[in-house]
Amino acid sequence: MATPQFRQLRRVYGFDEVAIVPGDITINPEQANIDLKIDGFTFTAPILASAMDAVTDVNLAILMSKLGGLAVLNLEGVQTRYDNPQEVLTEIAQASDAEVTPLLQKVYSQPIKENLVGERIQSIKKSGAVCAIAVAPANTKRLAPIAAEAKADIFVVQSTVTSARHISKSYRGLVFSEFRQSISMPIIVGNCVSYSACLELMRTGISGVLVGVGPGAACTTRQVLGVGVPQVTATMDCAAARDEYLRESGKYVPIITDGGIGNGGDLCKAFASGADAVMLGSILAQAKEAPGLGYHWGMAHPHPALPRGTRIKVGTTGTLEQILFGPSSVTDGSQNLIGALRTAMGICGVPTIQEMHKVEIIIAPAITTEGKSWQLLHPSH
Image 1: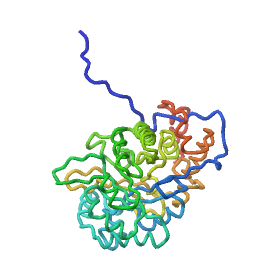
Image 2: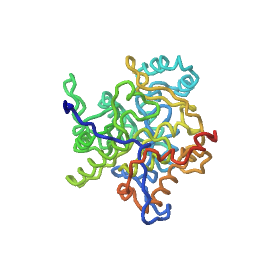
Image 3: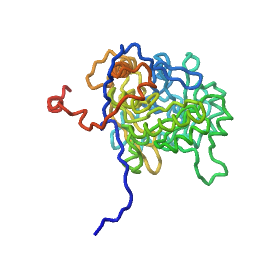
Image 4: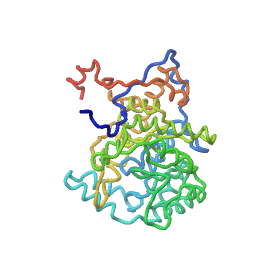
């Protein structure tokens, strides 16, 4: 008896299942141009620090800008709910595993203080740093005018999943094409993982798209909701949308792979899959300057009814500069990320990120374990 045909599943891929093929020629890594352009801004390091309370505060945002990257401050986190957020961050870091979820739910139940929104932005701006801030769609209309008045540079609208068409009971939800007209700064929107959703978002006139649902080390969306697409496929599909939008409009909208990047190899694979930049959380939470004090937690963790994050201990491994530019003091690929990207581009013989998008990627699920039995049996740490 024939098996009835129901639905065929598409095979998709994450970082651990693919590898980058070296080029036929090689170039000096220092000759690689890795600049990221977001409207009128150019960043010499195509790395964004995620809008998470354990990763980005005012001080890290300033330092990240000085190093050529961009840190995104969460306008709905402890920085805008508490006059002295460091005390709260210390309490979170010191809580036991049993206490931490109720504590986070309590911490984030405090109201956002609008005066602190402006103060935090101005503190970043006074240093001469580029200031990027993030809000969820529900708070965008309320906080955008405050952010604009405080002279924020880049506005990020971010939630677990964001689409250009959201159906709700409210009279009128957030319409990106209209929002685009109401503020003059570049708008980055996330997160999405599909060609069609990405293309629709770009057609609203935004300036960048964050790609990734649930791959973050501190995120449990995939376990709790079963929703997500592995990052290599998600990045490739959204890169195809970017290229299609470029063909139809003449405008290049960068895509930023957000989540699931644990080392330099993952980062390089993200760029080979089509990313123009990456957003990092857990790796940067390991910096001495990170506000999480060696811990990291998902921003969906404090949800009052359905927490979807977990606090993880990442430790403190080095300075932010070491993590980005070396010299590396660890062998696991979590430091000198820019050096890793430049070296991979050199090995592939590509002088620009756009050329990196064209390198060959192969399915190689054993790439991290092949020939590594000694490392696996006798880890150095």
